[in-house]
Length: 238
Ligand code: HEC
Ligand code: HEC
Image 1 (spheres, rainbow, N blue to C red):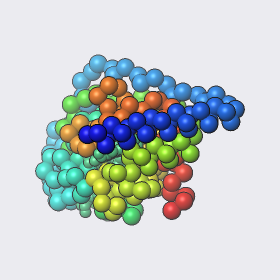
Image 2: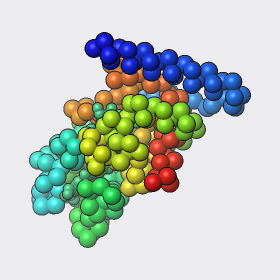
Image 3: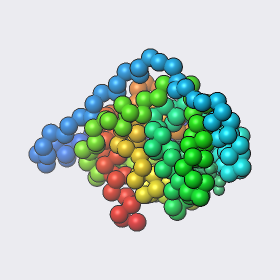
């Protein structure tokens, strides 16, 4: 415990120094990301039950081995696909394209051979587990990050790399977090999707949120954007 407190103090000190350096360099004032939008009240999306039933069969044939029954996932092996926060912020476009193309360099294979109709059925099955409203349009419309990748690297190395691996390599690095530094994820996720995941986390997984009093570490909106800016630079360095 004492060591954790000491590390936190050290981090806070370093952050102060870093932000002081930044002010001295007369950088133009950074645009803060939009404040988190209020969650619109509303029911989870309606799903065609026949399509979802067809999707369930396809899921059980193709995905259950890794993503487990009901898509609950398995830490360090495959993420949860029925997690409420994931379903709430991921568009059909994100899910369809991720399933079609897989994530090169990770355990997630491409499923283009199933064809679009079947992949749509699987997405309907996943969505039948949703408990929160679909906020994907609003999240994807959030402004792009204009953060500072150098500061973002500092935070990433200190906080995120423990689980996501150095350079966001994911499970191959031995942690429980996915490969968020690889093109397979970054080419499909908007800055709003990444920002919202960092803020809120994903309940019942090891990905806790980083915003608000219950956070693992309370990151400001501009620190979150610094991390996104850093992540965007990672694939080109590998
Ligand atoms: C051999 C194991 C394996 C199989 C089979 C598999 N996946 Fe995956 N899947 C993974 C892994 C590992 C990841 C995380 C990759 C990473 O590190 O980014 C993943 C990630 C995903 C994601 C992204 C989730 C997120 O949190 O962003 C989706 C969506 C997905 N898989 C859907 C499916 C579907 C649908 C099927 C069946 C058609 C399937 N997967 C089959 C291993 C698998
Ligand atoms: C204690 C471990 C842990 C830490 C620390 C952590 N994460 Fe995660 N993160 C996870 C796990 C686990 C998941 C996937 C959830 C699942 O398995 O269903 C995840 C998912 C994500 C995703 C969604 C990726 C996808 O494939 O859809 C993003 C983005 C993300 N984390 C960013 C971050 C950032 C940025 C930090 C540092 C500020 C961070 N995480 C710190 C464990 C962690």
